[in-house]
Length: 309
Length: 155
Image 1: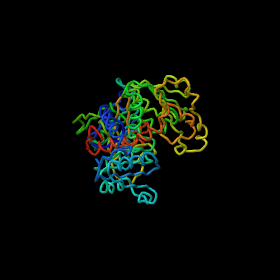
Image 2: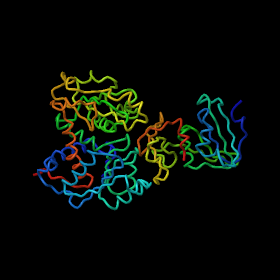
Image 3: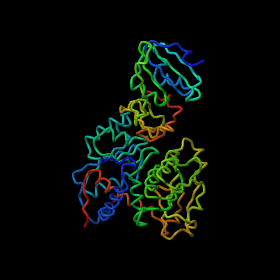
Image 4: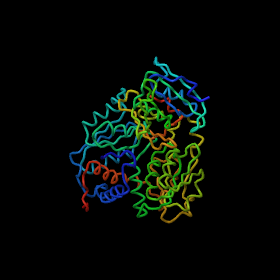
């Protein structure tokens, strides 16, 4: 029940409840208030694939709430010796109260959830889903625009392998977003996702060209073309550096438009954007902490007090 | 000439009618009747059909298909009619129903799915998203399966 594998595990109402909780937890996330709601609880941080922000922000979230963290990395552990995911998860089931898993194989999070009793949070499975990233993205968008309803969102870059855009687009169409998908043909959003988005009533436009979408956007969500997901270097070189957002591109943008990026960035988002009022990506990275705090509490059935002081 | 006269009546067994034209061999594979079985099987392909234009028909002697086998059949021939024959008469008509989930019937074809590791012990699970047109998705990785190739992934 406490699992979060895809955004389908949360209703719109639950999403808004988690975002409300996250807002209340911001002072705790900043370390201004100590609120040990998760004292005595242990989080299993299972990263079978590299991560910086997701792993660290989960750890920060757990520790700010008084909980403990066990870290597993696949290098040098029993995973490297060929242990099945099922067996690894049986061990974690005994050691931790909740676990977050990132895994290179798609479906690994659902598989883990089926294998154990403790709640599982999907921290990214292959090119599949990344719902806790989506929740912090939604938090960032809602804090900037005051609402999630009916926004004009432009997603740019690797929409094929970029799991953050898969989960985020699913969630946004449920709130009536109009989504423009900008990518080279080889990195288009997978057909089954586009078909799902349309079935949910989403107004979806697919294009290879970025500049004409900027002026009407409420949110521009940039993503990195992920070298590590390409089977060969030649294919990567054909599309690397195809999109570059600079300060000059934003001259006609709406005043309240925000630029987001799950980070790390390479050259798709120029440093000149950092100093503009539109830049929200570093705030977005911080927002991972209060949002993941709220998600940990939800999965563990811990109520968050109305006023956090 | 009607298809009934192309193949002699069987004494006991299962008759599967209204298989989409050209799919009888896939049905045999899906039911795992193509290897290691000694039952006599009669097959006609591409015969005229009032309902379907053209169809295939299979008759399997001395074998009554069970529900699990009929569930497999639903993936290739959801509109087939199945009759259990006893002593030259239709003893039972069985309906084919496409359920909502296929458990350990077909494995996911996606090369990066967690279930590709054959040592992982949990069952293979695929969800039926829609029957017409048929859309099947892995319950773990969420990838849509190519219906035309699904017979290659039977367990």
